[in-house]
Image 1: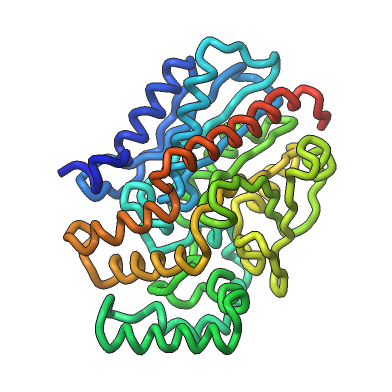
Image 2: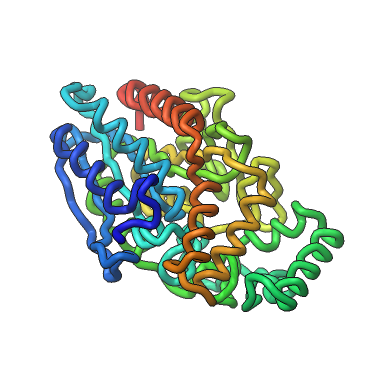
Length: 369
């Protein structure tokens, strides 16, 4: 056995397709090998493709796999776009940088988190400073630490879960759980106690490829939040940034700006109370670049349904076996939540993602640093 599901692409197949497309388009490739292997012993790596003028001062960046299992959508769009760019001349002075599966372990194992049970979008922090304090999470942690998938312990955890919803409401509970927490390594939305491999690797990629750039538009690719089949174009940051006016002028009412932090609320399905997002890290790491950090978030299923599958997958990796029959059933359910098998869903999100990238690529020349 070399994949979880023969009818679905495996991590290795995603990687092979991306590398073929990048090579055919004439991209310069660099690999960052992960220290751990995949579920079937496969080598894991983040691959970086630079397409266009090596000295380009304006760059479109596409980043996939921040949340591993969401990388199936991101990888598909990256490969499709590279295939469409084959033989196509980019505007002079403009390049494309593709960062493929920054959390390769999560993609290979079909997990949203990384090898340390860590949510990458809660990990981009300055760990020399005090970490965000989410004391409210400790009151619900036992729900997620349940050692049973079925049975009296799970029944008790489910009852506590329903009681928390009755007391706080669904948005209130999720504002606590999804905000990120830094005390329970065996909990949900754990942010870690130090920079992860993916964090360190992305910072290295950014420093090596973007530090001398004048203007950049970066798209972090996600799924799971929002209405089914609707790709939301967002900018998720802690405060307004210098290039925000250009980002708004470029995309107009299509762009939704989400300011994050304690007490913030959002009806998008994306957690507004959390910190440690990729977008903010990029802004902090590239102060000399006129950077527009975007997120494309493709909606799938209702939040409560997605959350239920996250709970089951969390149990699986804490107490079960991802490769047995129960594990494979849970994996298939989780993959469906973040990358629906529906071909119409896949085609719609690709169409909209391509539109966004084509628009940004054409506009980069007109944006002044």
